[in-house]
Image (cartoon, rainbow, N blue to C red; front, top):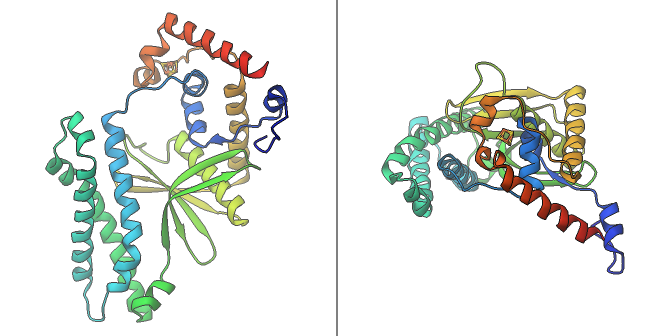
Length: 307
Ligand code: SF4
């Protein structure tokens, strides 16, 4: 375990070691067990892609938006109309996006992505966020007629971004995109980009959010009844209701992930050409010579650390 004393032998450390797995490994396992092994055991990675850069820009924007929320809410004054509040939010969100794009200009340049084009593409998401938030706050003010610090203290839900939770008991850790905080509960929200299912939620997204619900239950010591996946490209927020079967599914999957990443067996290829074609490790995965060499090096390193 992490707290072993210095004179504990390395083999004993290895025997006692229980990995705490990232929640994202559950999704990777569901996609392809071999991919999980390539990434986590053989440490094979691929260069960052354009979609990942744009995804992280969106994430940074939402993080900054949440940080500035208190100031914005407290600045609303009596008599301000919904349109005026929304217009102020939009102006600030636009500046946040511009600033974030400038901070990422070298990454964008690598993929020939222009600042103005990306601003226009991403801003419609932020405008939608602004519309939802300002409507919520406006209705709240109409009902309670409070402003300033009192408004902020009473307003719900408050939103936290990039919430980092580790549970030794569950053997899992994760960074939750957003957590909505209500007086008596919290709700995790995971942002996703890319293709959206016609109905429901992709299985790997469902498992990921369910794992976050479990982590939040552990952290807050209270049941969490639901979570959301927010498909950003279509602005579609889809709900997942917690149930005991889902929890068992997450824990069983966690055990399979641990078995895979602590094992020495390279899992076989999956029998799904569509997944392989979409897989960013496809080239390396099918390069037998490269994989054999990585396996040998990794096994040799494992033997050294456990002997
Ligand atoms: S190429 Fe196919 S078999 Fe290989 S890691 Fe990717 S999905 Fe799995």
